[in-house]
Length: 270
Image (cartoon, rainbow, N blue to C red; front, side, top):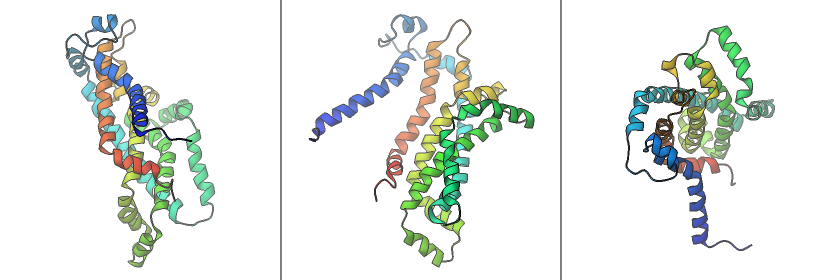
């Protein structure tokens, strides 16, 4: 089978990227339009740049929602990595009875839809008196562990055995080997799982909508709903809030893009 010329292939990739970027571009353009112009000419360029939508979003506590989402995302992702790293190391380097069965049991969490257990989790939180941040961080970490363990284990397997043997000769224990040898080398895998899990936690709505009771603790997806009333929606303000919500994740991806590519391809080639 003949390969496509490089120019044709690059054009196809650029066209595909443009298709995926169109919703973001439309939201960015629409965020600078007044409400009337957005309704009449939704696909046209704005006649002039209006920052009133961003001002309205800021007055609507978008800054507070942004801070809440940042706190929840950072705590959740850090907890996933801290809890998953020892498990991934054990499954990758240690030999113990039932390791395959236990790993398979953990990975079955990938098959369970997170929001299928929304009602039982709500009942448990109500019985324990847990609410707001703790009520959502717990499920985020629990449902993020399987994928984090899977990706970290795949990278740990690719680390040369000689490095571990040298650390053992120097008298290092397993915890020191993990945090002093494996984790620094696994930066690509850590960046990959951090971006993937941060994107999920950042954009997750049902858990945050059901479990967070106080408005001052609401995250961005829930906060954006406050710009939509029963009979009217402030679409310009909503689009401005969406653009604000997209910026942090795009910045993280661009910053760690090289590590993410290396993390995704780890263990694919022997």
